[in-house]
Length: 228
Image (cartoon, rainbow, N blue to C red; front, side):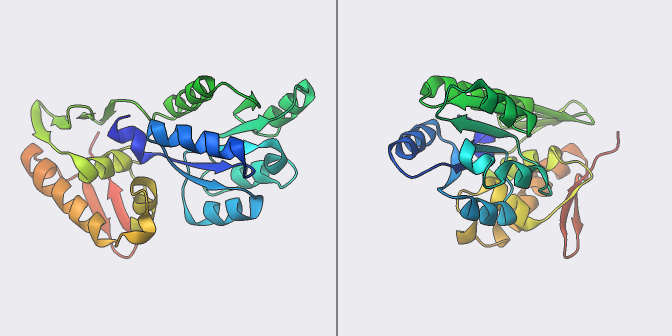
């Protein structure tokens, strides 16, 4: 897994038990960051405080407890993979018609599920090793940023913050959104780490490449912008 993969966060809504343990172990081994809950009430709580790139949910939570509707009405809809312990094709059809992006029958092959997850993330642009916006090129694997023929190096959390902002050009992004997206336990981290990361970007990237890419919006957050 590369650093870009670790920037994404999943919400897993599944009943407690052997399947939840199996899924959690595999996600851990793959290096994914996720929150695991066993009911729709907890899922609703996390959806209110965090941004998720992907949701895995059992059918009973997606349908009976309204999780699919909840995610579609959220401020930033998240793609949902629905899982169900049934061969009933009508349930699969219903899940897709009600907003699910993918469907998987339980029991499932773990490798197949990982492939489905990676496919969903690739459609979102997550997992790509290169980003390009308005001539600014980011080589994530090499930890390099290029612009107008010049190259600068940036690694670690500052690089992840830059990648996150580049994918949201012209949008005002709060410190809390950045923390939730990038840090595994954002509740244990102070917002000062964001200021430090932004300062690193300005010192190592903007100064070297002769650009001014990140605007501080008082009391609201940061906005990435470059002239096209």
